[in-house]
Image (cartoon, rainbow, N blue to C red; front, side):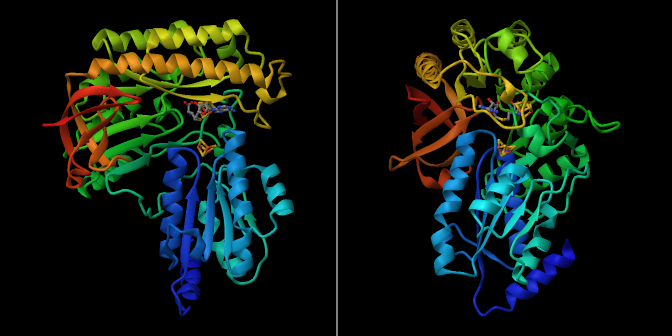
Length: 454
Ligand code: SAH
Ligand code: SF4
Ligand code: F3S
């Protein structure tokens, strides 16, 4: 890879004008982390980075394939830059990420968006410099969506978007094959990074002033299972907690089938770990859970919830829900509504089921209309809104420790997140951004709480 980086750099730096690169990432935090690595490569190859696509010499769309609307947005963007290509024929356009790993998408790109020069899948990031060199040397289409190897490339430099928040992937891929989900097909099997490498990276980040470390994996609870003599996820959390410095540790996602009381104990034991757990349940019906191949029952799921709540009665949970899995009945939907009323999540990321070609669920003949799914979604959102409105009131009168992330839309108001992952707003000076402060909560608002700085 280094050889090609140097060759591209020789070409780019020999130009009279600084060449600029624009990278737009879609999808999850893992993809954003990889977008930062793509920026790192571009910077190494001599490009300047810009947030404005209009004056870029290279544009990379780092894509997500998880739902159809994610893909539609990407195609919308690729369509929209056609006019840039007209005004700047030397503009290079590339597609990376999860969509690039799908064959039918690559075929569609070749056919309908012939001005796309480069495509590299999530398993071919190291090929990017070579593909770019080929295009700079006149090749028309440089596409590479190699199959997965099991080696993790640790050699990428990352240009991080934030100086406060850092994402740290601890593993790549997924072994779970939930029947609705494309991720295992575009990301390959689970590959854990060595704990030593992760701990070194976090130590360095904390030394460099980062205040929030987000550990990422599709199922962090199975961390290390693919490596010999590797520590478990709770042990990894404890090791990172022991790193000196004032910072907060978060992680996602936890698959409920592998979430254990030890994980909950570890969250309570470790002072730097945020007191919050994102535990995607997907739905409240056991028969749908089985059809989704989630490999837990609602009863098992609730055992973990109840265990955490026995230690802290209002422990903060968030979750993901899919509404409208094929042939979901009114009774199934009702079980989901009952579940969220029982658990009282502080936030829910809810999605209408999206058919993904190549997955098992895509073969099911779905009898439920889009209209019914839409109605269920609206009802679901109204119930959750009511739960959040009521449950956020519990914070009034409490003092929360907040990592200040930026200014809110209202002038003079700062925003940040508490240990429980609740959005907290307060009046304060922008010099507090990036610092931990204590805020006494006076009001609960829509999906946030408001308070006074102390
Ligand atoms: N590995 C994580 C989730 C990654 S995808 C986990 O298992 O929790 C993030 C969320 O997208 C999922 O939790 C699910 O709720 C949603 N999702 C995935 N595939 C989907 C599909 N085909 N349609 C709708 N939502 C989907
Ligand atoms: Fe998809 Fe399931 Fe893997 Fe999450 S655990 S990425 S939902 S297959
Ligand atoms: Fe993430 Fe979307 Fe890929 S959710 S793993 S970017 S399909």
